[in-house]
Length: 240
Image 1 (tube, rainbow, N blue to C red):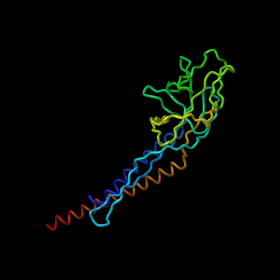
Image 2: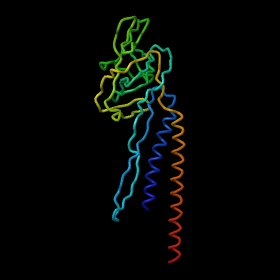
Image 3: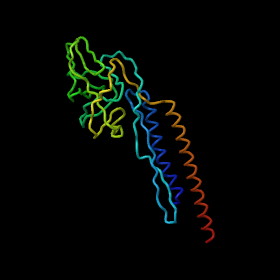
Image 4: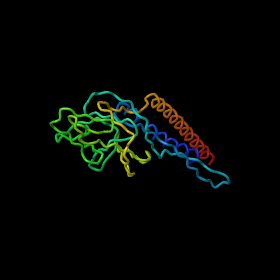
């Protein structure tokens, strides 16, 4: 196989990864707390046996997460919380704690604050958040302090990592990280709101069209290369 074909195949592989990423972003445009994802293309240069010769190949090995603030939708839900600024809620999962921006919460039968999937939300000390069953009003101040009938009970934990590149996407709206978790002191909480997805639909749809066209051009080139090589083999075969 010729170098041009190898280079095109690596490009096609990277474009396919980007197309899958863009499609996932589009599918999650209405998912609360979703962070848009992108890919970074890397160039790998391989020396050739000829003097001064080299071939460059591409790959999309690195993914990054957008940190742009999503819009806030008012729900008036007592347990609906939206983060403004750089920070995440800490959610307890069976396989370890995860970070999330999705603040659509509810209470479980044990009166603990949980996600809609039933996973417990943790406070600033890493403990589950308990909601007094006899409380008539539950309030959350901007710093995350939860009050019941005017009495402070606990403080919702808001966390961040030093470098967002250390975040590994666990599913659509949760992340895991081996990096130390730091308090998100500059972040605030808005009660009765949910943060929307930060996906830019116009940009994503435009990018999807661009990637599809680039992929189609690469496929046409591979088809022509295949036809050319077959023609060469036919000529060589007939000459023998």
